[in-house]
Image (tube, rainbow, N blue to C red; front, side, top):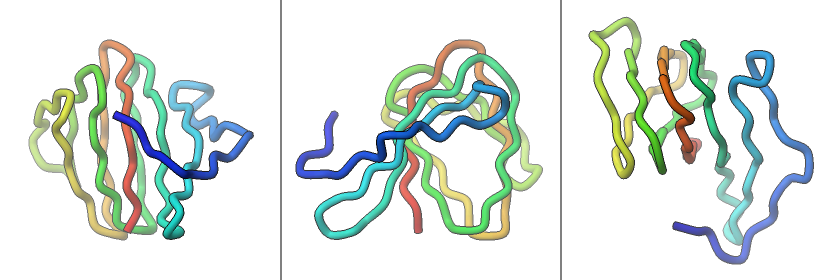
Length: 101
């Protein structure tokens, strides 16, 4: 439930008029992640790098590259390759970790 021995960016990443807010975390080995929350909304993320999205708390309804929507709960994750996209819908705050690459 936590990352030890990390650097955390002081400034938040704020997207979609504040509906998605995260902080960048860099691990000791240089691996970069973001930790954040998506407030109730429907958002589309177009990716330039591969991402693995992990739900920490809450529920997310996700369509990957136009596929039918699937439900993801705490402890579950989905993966999208670089150049792809996903649409996420939440009806409650959804806390997540984004693993890049």
